Amino acid sequence: MSRSGATGAGAGRRTGAPRPVLLAVDDEPGILAALQRTLRREGYEIVAVDSVPAALRTLRERGVDLLLTDHKMPSASGLDLIREVVSHWPEIPCFLLTGWAGEIDLDEVRRLGVRALIPKPWDDAELKATLREALPGG
Image (cartoon, rainbow, N blue to C red; front, side, top):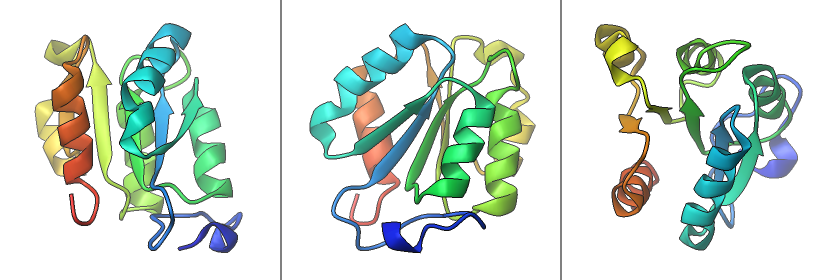
């Protein structure tokens, strides 16, 4: 779906767009800034938001190609967000970023089709490669 095709009804994965849109979600501004620094030369248009409600608004308003979300956030968890994405935009690859992997239900992660559980702190090269693999031609 092209950017012009993004509607209030929900905008899923865009095809043929000049740059893939990565929606990064984390309640910590420092983490969002680090993700933007790490990924800025990877060719993504990075949309950074600090909450699940803001992420859902973004998903409803525009096309998104990848979702990278923190797990532990005040308003809702990353898995809560991924459940919504899987329900409404199942074509969007989802990645879960966490410093608390031991607290996550790995069966649910698999059931939801999460592409990767990415530890905090992450390895820059591994993060870039993991995200790249989710895009066509990656």
